[in-house]
Length: 221
Length: 199
Image 1 (cartoon, each protein chain N blue to C red):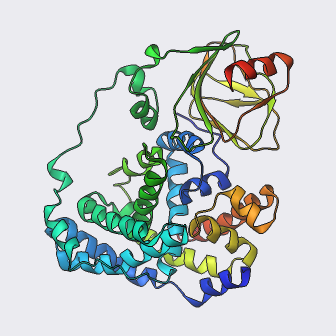
Image 2 (image 1 turned 120 degrees about the horizontal axis):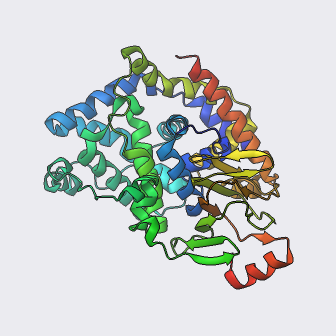
């Protein structure tokens, strides 16, 4: 896989510091699964956190190593004795980044797609109760566009299958499109096959077309 | 407020690199011999700092202590999974603490965990001098942070230490979000170019 589009440095910093919202973090995690370059960057960014951690003034631990905690050490079962049972993935699931395969627990073929518009389907992925964002799989037919919209925050799109073009830039499998609140765009799926994406927004979209606005009202996207 | 960030960053020079090799050897002893004395060294170095970090991020004393202990307990359990070529011991512990904190907040699957824990053995072919340079990374990063303009170091600290999102940082500093992001990028660019120099 040749990946040419990566998350913005600021996005990856937020991810590494642990301050990026759940929906956006999910997409970044899936990109990292496929992108060694971003894994290296993220490791360096976490080292920034480690350096700052070491510089903090320590807060004494009340229950120290001598007390109950030491007893707990003995009761801990070494995880090596219990190798993680690998789930058997179908070939279909292996096409997906591991965080997504683990989360979905079913195959692409078994997804209960919902209708979003002509040639456009989506599948919502649940987030924790207090997560404000929106995470979904999108499946869009060749030549179709996601309705034009502007952003109320960062929006991340990771290509899982197929490709799309946005403002004359082509995004293929593994590529991540990182659009901040300034951007208005209209990605169009390339000819040849449908495009499946993992898509996240930290806030609801504001569609610009009448059709888009109506769809938004009914679908909550 | 900005001055205090900078002062604390410059006054407390990290002794991390001198310690990095020592901490790695403690961890190796924990992994190979279940050495409790070595674990105590790790516990006493990192436990109180993880607790301090969580308190800075808004956890109360009980939760901070709880997560700090859980972090170190994870270190004990997973010591054999630590791969030196993936970064320093402190980076690993920072990551464990960060994930446990996210776990508590979201009470659900941590997506991020999969991107960082499942690549053991991937970089096995690192040359010995690359391993050394990984160890020097912390020291180099500490040096870069100490020389960053205060406006850049402030956003980095608010993100990593205070656990604020970019938007929350923008609110707190009364800056446009774009300015916060560009300061983040500038800070990291300096870190990256310093690290590239190590290779």
